[in-house]
Amino acid sequence: QMQMVESGGGLAQAGESLRLSCTASGTTVSNIAMAWYRQAPGKERELVARVGSGGKIYYAEFAKGRFTISRDNSRNTVFLQMNRLKPEDTAMYYCAPQSRPDGWTWGQGTQVTVSS
Image 1 (tube, one colour):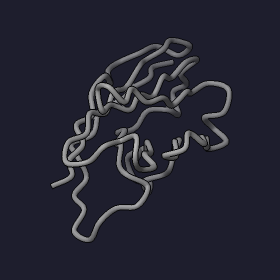
Image 2: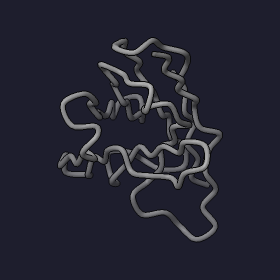
Image 3: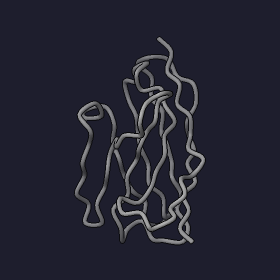
């Protein structure tokens, strides 16, 4: 069964950096497109960044120039480096395959809180 465990969130001040990690089990991250999503209170979950199996990368507009998605195949882990954080980046961050199977259950996520 495919499962993702997110970590690395925390409290940061505006302008600081955080690095999120997502360790996968039940799948091989190098073989599939993996993505980071976030959900702020009262808002819908949104795509932050995606890395394809061939390495093609997509960033949401708000992430361009500040966030970097990467993958360590040896650790079956996907990362999200977040620089120059803003208060509006405050959200729960999740990772997941771009194509999710029926019955997909989101992980617990990792909370990012940015103070001004």
